[in-house]
Amino acid sequence: MGFNKVRASAAEACEGITSGMTLMVGGFGLCGIPENCISELVKMGVKDLTCISNNAGVDDFGLGLLLQQKQVKKMISSYVGENAEFERQMLSGELEVELIPQGTLATRCMAAGYGMPVVYTPAGVGTEVAEGKEVREFKGKKYLMEEAFDADFALVKAWKGDAMGNLVFRSTARNFNPMMAMAGKITIVEVEELVPLGALDPDHIHTPGIYVHRIFQGVNYEKRIEQRTVRQRI
Amino acid sequence: MAWDKIGIAKRIAQEVQDGTYVNLGIGIPTLVANYIPEGMEVELQSENGILGMGPFPFEGEEDADLINAGKQTVTLRDGSSIFDSAMSFGMIRAQKVDLTILGAMEVSENGDIANWKVPGKMVKGMGGAMDLVASAKNIIVAMQHCDKAGNSKLLPQCSLPLTGIHCIKKVVTDLGVFDIRDGAFHLVELAPDVTLEEVIAKTAGKLLTQ
Image 1 (cartoon, helix red, strand yellow):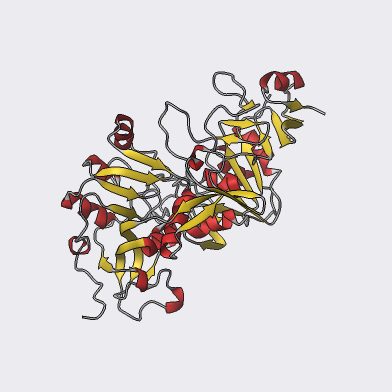
Image 2: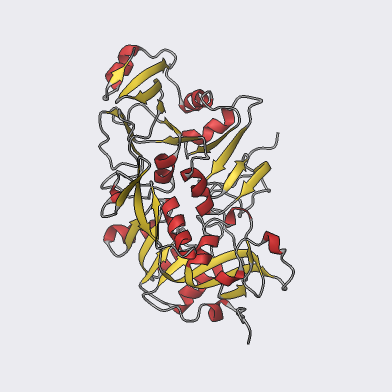
């Protein structure tokens, strides 16, 4: 009995995700995306998903894999370039897209994890992002009221985690993962390394396990690089 | 001869102050990092979660977990830190980042900026631009003075969907440097071999040349 958060596989971890649900998917570009969970969603064949994710992957990797199978009804993102199939579905009207400022996206996740119904942010004041939103002035500056997200599941990728669901992220693969972990009604985490209890220093944990419902050891990470940039050795 | 992209980047680098935190957008702004004067300490912020971003890695040392906001592989400098996206935009919103340098499609004489959407064309999104322009203390725009068809990008009013309003303080183009205040572009400096007549002819917004 006890906490029982560890799952044997992505298939077990993703149980209960059904068509029509709203999912948060961690990652920035292809960095820090839950590769195993995405592959599992493709296998499950769930459809009409609403995905809250900063980006939409590339044609043959990341959320692009779900788009290829036409499993996504709506994307809520801040930037969606680099994906021809996405563009085709968006222009043909098959895919609904809501573009929101990146900081607003992060903060609406954070608000959910902190139990706050709304946040006020100046991003988008005076632009089309403000349409239909309450504007309030504080100390002479205008802010938009933005609501906390409401997601059925959050799919998160961490570097290391333990059976209690405590998480440590690596480098910029952290990005949206911690706040999405905090925001899901059910949070599923895949890790590169599932470590024994006590192996993680409590002072160094990025996300406390209370936010995590299911955790599993991921396999076969590709960790594709979207823009490989290098400098010459002199 | 007017400034090329590197010329614009070099000129903007002169505006960067020692001991400041700076966020650089994609394109010409990224180049500014290469021309920050020797001996000056500037900490680069990348909104996907880095303070203290370093140059591109040497070949073979790329790390898929370490990218900048343009999704390019980068490195970290000694003294750098990593954080999540909420904190990253938290420090931007709280004006801890001193200077933002970004590109634009249009800037207006009252400091509005449009740089994310062209109606009828594929819209990729605003990324972090709306958050940055809504909060930054100081924003410099790097762009060409005219579009490819020769139309001025320094306008009385932006014609494209806005990214932010009343926020741009300075514009550096291939033709010169312009401060924006009191509803006008104020000419600060002409690029080499650019004439005042050319700038007047190519600036659609209100231009004050002192």
